[in-house]
Image (tube, rainbow, N blue to C red; front, side, top):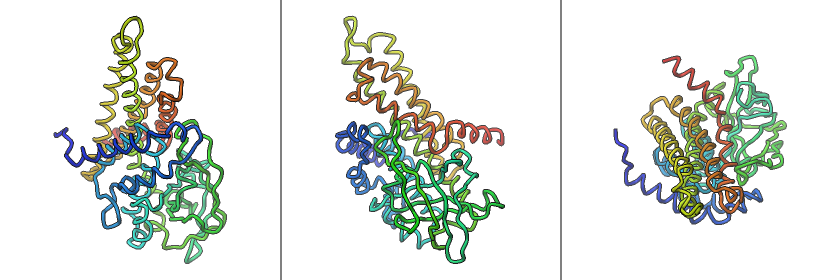
Length: 380
């Protein structure tokens, strides 16, 4: 059992840390306040290889392992979770799904541009009546011979307005329930495809979240991913890896808040000494450090399982469940350690607290993670 990171891992971690500090930190408060999508920053992330980290170099990717991805996600998320969710969706859901299950033609046409950040992708599963219950798809893709006719609405889609490539999950044969679902590649600009207004959100306000409407959108048969009826399995397999990305995001939010709280506690004085010397604060810092370290190990274990081609459903769900709770607990305590300043935007921790909440909701709520975990341990 080796807990030491390789030289390559350390280099990637440092590169992500430098990028976050130099490119993401300036303007992060304004982007959050005004809900500005980090267009230039995302473009630079693509140039640095952060948007196709696990994609084979022959398709324009970095060819790195999942551990590298977790390390980079943590560093980016410490500073700007709105940028890291773009990175997570593009890497975990869109690029990985296409590389693993797409045809060679689909990879050449779409994956090569997604991996380099020339375009970004979106993963479209959730609906007004199909959030946690992903089998209740109301969006339909009716087979018309050489194409599908797509109709329906998708909700809470990250990169909804800025993506060019959308992986849409839709029902083709309702009698077959989840076995009648397909995954289709939809391009922005296809006739009948409309993008709704940007959502006004509590956190990750710089990310681009929209509803999408499809009205008789003709999607060519060659844009289907996998065999007929593979869509639900595609979504579940893709989300299993996506949970590692969001667990890493939660870890980054927590560790970012902890680092700010630790620094502040060494500078702020009360009752004649720095507040870190008061047991009430010191014990909070100790609890935060332990929880974050445990979350980091869960994230890296899940990443290792994925890299070793082990089943990572259980370890990914555990990582996401625990890391998202740590993100909430840590950011709340970070605000508390900052006192009144913690409620002020310039100290960053209030934003991290707002950003943390979504990690318990998207890509499978904490309650869904407990279903996955309980089923896995009972079946053993």
